[in-house]
Amino acid sequence: MTSRGDGLGETGGMSAAPRPGVTVFLTGLSGAGKSTIADALVADLEAAGRPVTVLDGDVVRTHLSSELSFSREDRDLNIRRIGFVAGEVVKHGGTVVVAAIAPYEAAREEARALVEQHGRFVLVHLSTPLEVCEGRDVKGLYARARAGEITGFTGIDDPYEPPARAEVVLDTSVTPLSESVARIRAAMAGGPAAPDSPHARDGHLQGAGPSVG
Image (tube, rainbow, N blue to C red):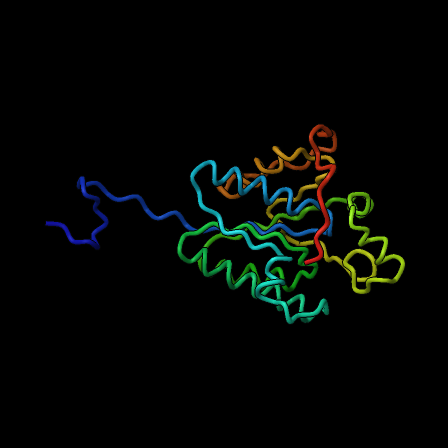
C-alpha cells in the first residue's frame, strides 16, 4: 500500500520533483529589444511544451495600472505589481516572461525579492545603446521627448539605472536574436550565459520597436 504523500508514482518509482517556477525579467530602454526578445523566447519555450505567462509593461499598465502616472513612485508601484503577479505564477511552478523598461534599481530588486520567495528570477539587461534605440523609434517618441513634448522619458530627461546584478546582459545591436534567446535559456537552466560578442553582427535586432511602459 502506498499513500499519496510518499512520492511514489503509479509504477512504484519515485515521482519526478515538480519543476521550480522561474521569471525572466527583461529590462532596458525603450527600443532596446525587449518585446522582440520576449516574443522569440516565448515562442521557443512554447515550442518545447512549456506554457508561459507574459507580463508586458504596456499591457499591465492598460489592464492593471491604468490609474498610474509616469512619476518615479508610480513606475515603482507598477513594477512591484508585476513582481507580485510573477511571484504568484512562479509559486505554482509557472514560467513568466516580463518585458518592462523598469528604469530604477530599487524597484527591480523589489520585484526580484517578491519572485525569489517562490522560485527563480533571471534579470536580463538589454544594454542596447541609446543612439541605437532612438534609431529604431518609428513612433518618434524620443524626438518628441528631446523637443520637450514628452517629459519624464527614460534615457532623455529621466534616468535609466543599469542593473548591478543582472544574470544576463545583451546588447541587441550586436547580438543575434537566436543567440540572445539561447543565452537566456541557458541562464534559466542555471548555466552560464556567455558574454556579449561585439563581432556578432548578423541577425541583430534592427527593427525592435520602442515601449513606453
